[in-house]
Image (cartoon, rainbow, N blue to C red; front, side, top):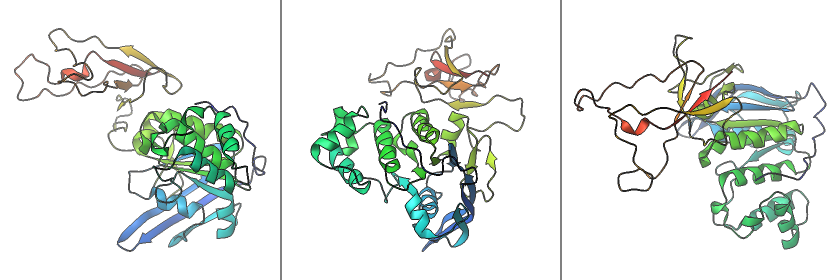
Length: 325
């Protein structure tokens, strides 16, 4: 889906001093910590990633940034003002689980109508249909919200939040939970940042690594961004070592600077099963993302396999993704 409707820039777009700042924000729950101390600084016209594992405080951070809950420790300010009322008016949480996430069984036109009402826009069936058509979503007017594809869902919910009067900051909460390539929601966030909005996106560390974008660590304490999130997507201690990550995107939606190439299957290796067959998984193997000049490290042979055979034939002969500088 491509948005053809122009975005209106918030009033702070040209103010270099405008910033959403969280300093050591922490939230406690009845049975433990909901959000470990987190600090960040987001400015108009940019997208800030905040990466962390699921359940590490994505929703709690979004609510704290929007002034909807008071942190147990730390502060959240917008242009130096920590008034919760001002935060609630200026910061919109987008598709936040349990908060602003629409009911999955509702028709899309109902969800859009309710959001347009909050923005003071027309809510007649014709007005809703015209709004959706202007954004290339006419095919899903009568669909249930749960049946709307993730890229369309994220784009529409972000545009609706941005249309509310007074909104300057958009907080997209874990859009990668819907699956698909992180490039799709990154493009949506970037489009709104170019319009002058301050955009904060929480995601997993794996999504941040696939995008190759520095991210603030959820629960990391200070506001510094780490260039490559930890875990299986991280660079080894040796800075010259290869960085290998799973690349679950197709050939047509790779991040800028990435290309695809085909690895030759070693002789004697069994071909990968066809998708949908009795022996297949039903999905394509996504390939591997490799830094320039680096080859993926060979996996150790399975002890149960006889010498000279390939332990995992499903990872050979597939497309791979290579990042070029």
